[in-house]
Amino acid sequence: MHQKRVLLIIGGGIAAYKALDLIRRLRERDVRVRAILTKAGGEFITPLSVASLSGEKAYTELFSLTDEAEMGHIRLSREADLVLVAPATADLMASMAHGIARDLATTALLATDKPVMIAPSMNLQMWSHPATQRNLRTLEADGVLRVGPGSGDLACGEVGDGRLAEVMDIVAAVEGFFAGAVAAPGPSRPLAGRRALVTAGPTHEPIDPVRYIANRSSGKQGYAIARALAALGADTTLVSGPTTLPDPPDVFTVRVESAREMLAVCEASLPVDVAVCVAAVADWRVEDDTRQKIKKNGGRPPTLKLVENPDILAAIAGRANDRPLLVVGFAAETEQVVDYAQRKREKKGCDWIVANDVSPETGIMGGDSNMVHLVTADGVEDWPRASKADVAARLAERIALRLGETAA
Ligand code: CTP
Image (cartoon, rainbow, N blue to C red; front, side, top):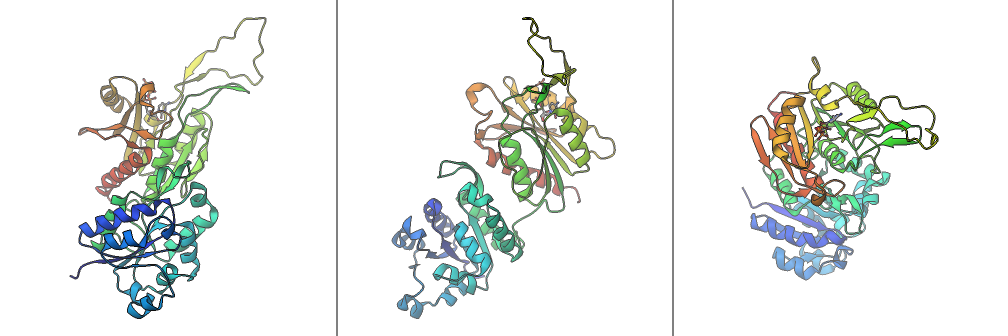
């Protein structure tokens, strides 16, 4: 088999500098990399650095007569086994979706007869914009492969989807493609045909029409898990308590307020193959929340009688006829994390518990990273501290592996 060849198209964007590391990593794996740097890409990195790392001329202009004589754009796009666009900007994706050829990069993309993989990178709003999502669907329907984007801190200062996938994840996707692991069209979707249910966020338990009991959960980890499951192809329903987060793309999101509403929507969403209960459900609600606002009554504060809320995780795990194949719970603890998690797994009847330490000094509650232990019947795995998106991706992969052991 001949040496694998990648035509790398480097779009403009702050993540363009990561393309340099990408070239290095691909070459380490004996992949030959020839690169086209778009005009915007050239604002961030130089053709010289691209050429030095790839060991080949970096192509930049469509109408360079020398280039056309030496290597026409058609040949450039055909003499590759894979065309990889990284970073793929919103603009490049739009051009690709609409067949616009206005420079060397877009012309090569239109002229190629080879598989194309994109690694999108852009601002969160640009990524979630209906136009970009529409273009993405067009590209996926055209058989374009995709890796990422990830979620996390963006260069623009916002937090969310749109970050270029980690370089090693792009490398893995390319290797997977060459190994035939990624079946074209579309990225690897081991959860295609599976249904997933995720709960996330806090619940609000009414005291009266204007007051409620709540907690500090942001919903970030649950949303990331719903997104990660959907990215692997699962038909995913997210049942979310009140949060400030936008609906994740490709996820059917249902917004609820209280624990009882959350339970009702979850039960109505069954059957599913996997349920992941991430919500920080309020343990108690006020026994009789009044229909009228409670008034200050001659100086005597009211007494609120609390009653326990239904346990959604235990209810799903205990379903007789339609229990999901895999039920995953979370345990937020502030001490004896693994110990309590193991007990919680048995008490709630779920298969796995993802345990995390939410002591204030960890900054995990409401923060963007997480450090978890996966507690299963077989033992405990300590995962390194990582972004909530990465924890979600890893968990989704594990879920895919586990479900892969059982026929769809
Ligand atoms: N959970 C649930 N419904 C509830 C309470 C908790 O579905 N009414 C789920 C959470 O989504 C999570 C798991 O149960 O997956 C653990 O929740 P946690 O608050 O950590 O534990 P508790 O069950 O509340 O136990 P304790 O307060 O004793 O730690």
